[in-house]
Image 1: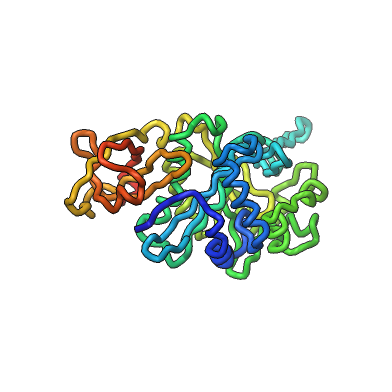
Image 2: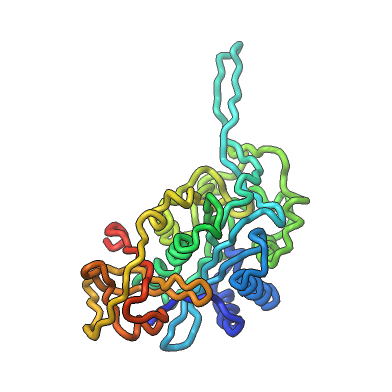
Length: 344
């Protein structure tokens, strides 16, 4: 059984193993024990109510209960950019015109931006390659949205997700080669690592403050602006199905798309709902719709996918699923069906 729960200190070893498989481009999952340990500590302090919103981060893991092994991770930052600047490139245009020459041209530009300051952020999504089958990826990605719906007042008005940009099999980013290298004089992998362990002062010190002409970039760099890494395409589709979309902001390192939305307009907020548990000895039907189910217990949050159908506005689940969720007959749980489009 695959189950979502809050991270614990005992997960550090598994987290380091996941980090070793993540490759270049996932800045929030560095191969650094001290950084990951500090992040676990910050997440636990968030649940304990010991941090202000500007420092809060919820960190969830996907656990293979049969093997007692963490195989995935995802997170929510409550309010970004309030402790240190949050940078993005905004893709926009500048008009060059001459009435005398009868010339009018819109030129695409990159503007350094802090526009997402104070937004909540979906981040740190990574699933062990050995578990990229079935609906594990959807469970890991969507559970953050279900948690936000359950505890809406703890989050901001808008939500973003900075997606991993394109890099080749050797970890080379054409966007970085065309921009970052000229200002930082270091390899993409090193800049990515420094950002991941929290050493971000160099970004403010070295990033260009003036708009950049996209036409001056290499053709390869221009092509990947607003695109995502091939392994990130499924995650992008899942988030877009929930109402997040690309509005012209990209990552300053690799040019990956940033998706965003108003939280209250998202599908999960509108359509997730509470139902009562009905324990049953009948095996769960694999042909039934997949439902994301969570116990809405803030301190002991648990979520999993079940294949079952509502009956008289009750959720039939077996004893094993109820035990994993920490619920019993008549308990209230929050559910969200996967869309028909995703099941196709």
